[in-house]
Amino acid sequence: MAPWAERLSRYGEAGETAITLLDARADDDAGAARAAYRKPGRLRAALGAGRVRVGEGVLDPSPKRARTAHESHYSLATYIECRVIRMSTRHILLGLLAGGPSHGYDLKRRHDERFPQARPLAYGQVYTTLQRLVRDGLAEVDGTDSDGGPERTMYRSTDEGSRELAEWAAEIAPPAPFVTNEIFAKVVVSILAGGDPAGYLREQRAAHMRRMRELTAVKTAVGSDLATVLSADYALNHLDADLRWMTTTAARLITLTAEVDAS
Amino acid sequence: MTDSSEIPESPDSTVPLLAARGLAKAHGPTRALHGASVELHHGEILAVTGASGSGKSTLLHCLAGIVRPDEGSVVYGDVRLDRLPEKRLSELRRTDFGVVFQFGQLIPELTAVDNVALPLLLAGASRGEARARAGEWLERFGVLGQEELRPGEMSGGQAQRVSLARALVTGPKVVFADEPTGALDSLAGEQVMSALVHTARESGTAVLLITHDAQVAAYADREVQLRDGAVVPLGVTA
Image (tube, rainbow over all chains, first blue to last red; front, side, top):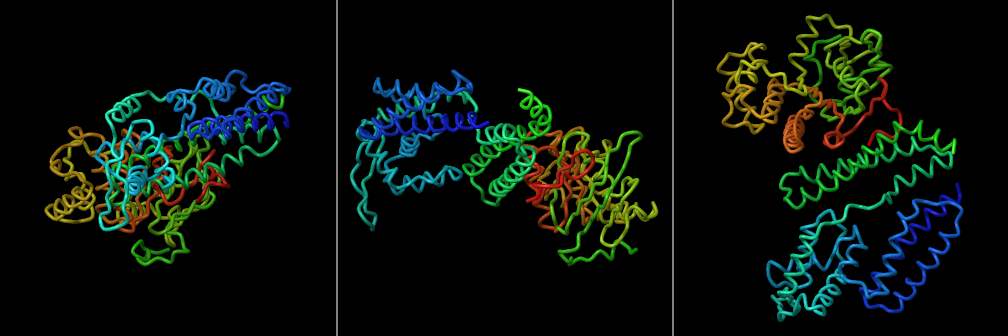
């Protein structure tokens, strides 16, 4: 049991480190990038020394790809691919700028309106990303606007920014290449440790259903706009997929437990 | 034992409107229910979920007084449904309960408005009055301009909304819905569920919703899960 849990935890850490490395590169933070670069190497060495194998060749590519990308001054496409499920703030801001010039405060407000179920965007992240867009020639400063309040820098998308946005929007998102789901890991670990996976699945199901009721209430509330309905639908369908997996797994648990016990 | 008219309009929220205790029911050698207990409160929307063959529909039939359980009790207000003579049970079903099935079960020869008017005609309303009220309910369910269509001339979603109007037109205290979206695509199903939930909440009608679909169950206030004819005991309620 212990080697499996330890190994799973190391893969989780390796994945996080890979993201840290890529983020550090994106921020031009050389010190943080060097520290993160060294860490995957240590993790990979530790993983190679373990007695057990978890999906060899399946879970490994992420830190490896991140390191390769670092060594070759990764391309934007590689960076996006490695982040997989992280939303691309720069492209979303470019999308919001597509309607016309805007300032950071307004972009932040419109982001939170358009993506109501997403993690709220921090003001600092908006301004940092706008500066990077300007640096990369994808946006440019378009004067200032005070509108009776404090003076604010206005930004607008450049032609190159429009092209970049169109390419990104048309790019097919890769289907998730492997399973790194916490619920899946907890069920497997619970079986390995002789816990109560069926009890865990019942409680997890109840938590999922509570969230699904909240989302259903949000999307059916009078006056819900299309963005709210679409984002609630997206979340509901993913929670529903989890639930169906949990239901099937609960039904299979007796067989599954017998298989693990016998191995 | 009392008449259904004695079911209080302003309920004590601690007393269930409908309660089943220890229900058992067999169909030949197959045990459909095996000690199932469930409570439905005034104005509550309760989802009963479970795999095929878990006993969901049999539970609905017992609670709605459509079939009698082999063992256990079904209490509506303070009326023992499982002991009520057939004639009184039939009358109570007509006045207090509305039922919606997966395939609507509308009468194919009747138009939408006549299908909805039927329960009112059976309760003694005049044809003109029944059709007028039926028209109002069809409007509430967004079935406009299709009042004179027959079920075969409507889409599945429209027909199911007509079924909902028929179930609610008499002002029942409980609506039993057995997989009401089971035959519909997801968008039509969503429209049917939104219409049902919105109208039930507006009128304070309790709903017992049978479904195997978690996204449909998420419209309910609470969920109970059935497995092998009994309620799964832990971690299933909100």
